[in-house]
Amino acid sequence: MENRTRTGDFGALLQLHHEARMHDTVRAILFGPRPMDVLRIAGFDPGLSRTGWGVIEVHGNKLAHIANGVIATTTALSLGERLAVLHRGICAVLTQHAPHAVAVEQAFVAKDPVAALKLGHARAIALLAAAEAGLEIAE
Image 1 (cartoon, rainbow, N blue to C red):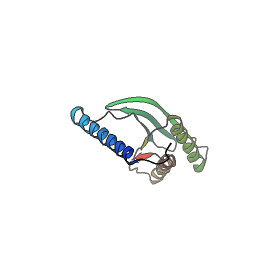
Image 2: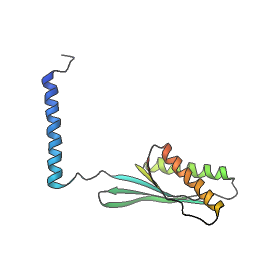
Image 3: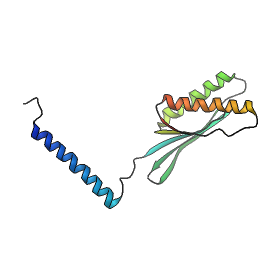
């Protein structure tokens, strides 16, 4: 058996590839684009005391609820410990539900600068966990 590619075989493969692409193009023109695969999105509403989360699936124009919950911390813990609890909880959600992308709620402008800073810390943890998982992030 030969261990090299013959020009004719390669040409036939290119022709098949071209015909398949043309078929997809014609089908898209006649019938619209192929339905999108299922896209799973995890959303986080960060807070230092409670970070809410939800997971949905998008299939075409249909949405399906998968799961939701809250990651809670206690004021008895130090700031660093509370952030670590949030990080572990968010990582657990990402691992368990394996989303393709993550949405993180934008921080609103608070009148209390200390509260805004704490909210910013929690938001940063959600962004960090998603980035560590290599996920696309929408803010």
